[in-house]
Image (tube, helix red, strand yellow):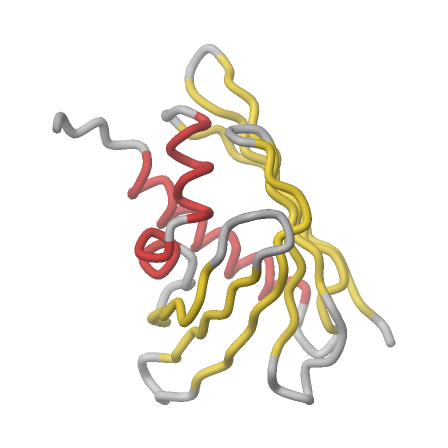
Length: 148
């Protein structure tokens, strides 16, 4: 089975802690992870090594949903998250792995995302576009510093 990999690099004006929490909080994930034109729903989230998650994206125009989930393989607070992902749709076979690396820098946090094993049926450029939109949403969630 043919797969591909995407790699993204961003610098966000926030702390590693806020980004790390945004990847492991169900409400936050439902807000920022769906790309433009999609809504998200987290059905289950157990953010611990060996814990699992399950969520869905729904196309707001067509109403078509796709469900996916996986297992957390590595969680290093404020530094690294590694998790697997599989689609429940049999036309999207295989297992993906996503690795998120965070590093504090003078103006915020460097965020690197590597997603491997993406099914060939998903166009590489579509995956990049979706991640870019998601990371734009993430920035809008974590960059504001709103007092308590």
